[in-house]
Length: 309
Image 1: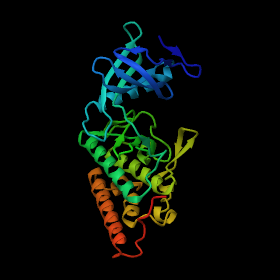
Image 2: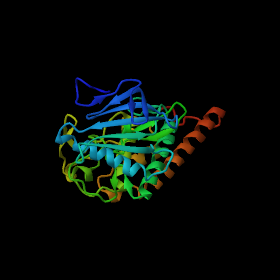
Image 3: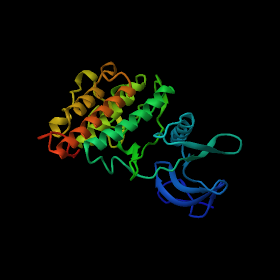
C-alpha cells in the first residue's frame, strides 16, 4: 500500500498504486500535511490532481477543515478561471472522527505567477482581468477567496489562467476564529479579524498586482517566519510607495488601480471585483492600441508599455 514519508506523517503512495478508483501516476507536490498526486480515474479515464490530507495530530485538524471548505465552496462554483472540485473522499477512524481526506480536483497545468511573473504590462492586465472575473463569480455566489497571492494564480503556456487553493475561502462577512492569510498580501481586516468581504479579495489582488509589477511587497502585518504574530495599527500604516515610483514604466492607469485596491479602509477600494475587471480590460486595450501606434510609426515616446520588469 502506501509508505510513510520520513519527513512528515503523511502516507506516500507509489506510482501505480490505487486510491479508490484512482491510479497514481506521479507525485506533484507536498504541503504541511498533504501530498498532491497526478492520478488517472480508471472508470472514466480522466486525469486529475488528487490531494491527500492526513490528520496526525490535533493541530492538523485545521488542514482537514480547509480541505473540506475547499471542496464545499469549489463544488458550488462554475467558472473557467476557478479550479474545479470533483470529489471529496473521507476516511474515518472506526465510526468516529475523520482522519484523512482525498480531494479530487481539476488538473491545472502551468506555472504560478511567483515563479513566472508576467513579462509585459498588457499580459499582466490580461491575466489579472481573468482573475478578477473569476473572483467576481465567487462574490456573486456569496463567497470570498481570502488568500489571493501570486502562487495561487497559475498560467498555462497558452495563457489560460486558473485561480487555485480555496482552502481559506469562506462565505462573505465571515469573522474567522484565527488570523488567516499570507504576509505581504493579507488585508488589514484579516489581520484584525474583522469581517471578510469581497473588498478583502480586492486588497489581496491589489497586493498581488503590486508585487507582480514592482517585485516589492505591501506591508500590513508583522510576521515571524511564515506565521502571523501581530499587526500594525491601521493608523500607523504608511501608504506604500506608488508602483510607478519603484518601476517608472508602470502605466498611470495601472498605478492608480493598484493604489486604490490596497487602500487600508475597505470603503476606499473599488466598489466591486467586476469594476476591477473592467478597468483592467481598459488598461489592456489602451496598452495594445499604443503598441500598434508605435509599430506604425504614428506614435512616439509612449511610456510604460515595454515590460513589467
